Length: 492
Image (cartoon, rainbow, N blue to C red; front, side, top):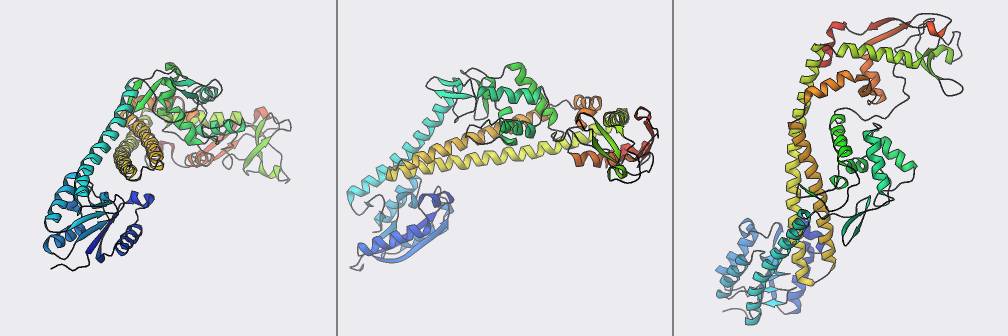
């Protein structure tokens, strides 16, 4: 015989996403206890699953234990959960388990849904609701993604606001004011060979703003340069479709920019232009101390001059034109690295680096795909909660998640493009560019990297002494290693 006072067990479960939706374990436990107290039900136990997915009951050991106890005992009148999706998300599992419980005299109570299967009408409603909710959720997700996919195929943009365009019922429309910023970024990067940082600093000094009214940084500039929307395409689910909107950047400039992005990805960004990278190596012809930077009073001419002279000590300036001595040294290095032996070695070094990058990109692509799957599950769950309380805040959350979904897809597409590019990259051409235009690439290095590189080659550079600056030329170069061992130095 069952007790006159009805008995029940509670069940609580939470996933990571539920914490933001007021479905914490404490929240569920509090409501179950309160419900049982208010309705005169004796709560025997609360089964706490902790963190776990509701998709498959086979993975929920605590849940299985509770069901087994309910089916083996005739002392439990109810299983109480906060909402039906805490019990089982899959409608087939939910209906099958409740049917078995009811036959054994145990009914399901879903507090938020106002369901008590001991009432025949609630029992039927629960069955229909389980089927309908799952189908409706699947249909909404399918229709949403299908609609976005069709829009992309038709050349319509699915993303959020984008600098350079305004949105209208007709799609993206070029904004005359902000599109100037986009054109400037592509021009400075591709034609002027500016780096991300310098472009960002330039835009901020001009008081230009990003789409979110913030300041530009390296990431913002890089994102714009990689966005095919500016070339008249839309990107969705990793695929490119010809857009209906007008492009801001023509095909010629876009293609040249993408090639430049690839080529320059192997060299540091240029950040210093007035550096004196021979400081410490270049020696005064009179006192043999280091030569340091010096700028003429008019600010037009730049030199290296004696450090002792600069500090007021007893030595002449013995200045030498910065341009002359630096061009001489860089020309010397260029002649060294153009040798077939060095070119072959550089090729092997870059092949090794590319191999590592390909491996890292593979890992990144896998990680991004997993993150997309996780967001899809969050969207499903948010829709599910929306069906429970019809709170429009959940729809705003869906919109936010969808935009995040698109942002990650953009990142995934970029990674996949980089991966494909690296597989088919012309390494021989890169080496040719490096050896042919070494001076250009050298100036892309940070100041400390420039000096470190030069100190691996040169110990001291001595000048001819003369009272006339035109006759102060390079007299002797002392290398740190045997010049014939430079290939070994690069290899290490």
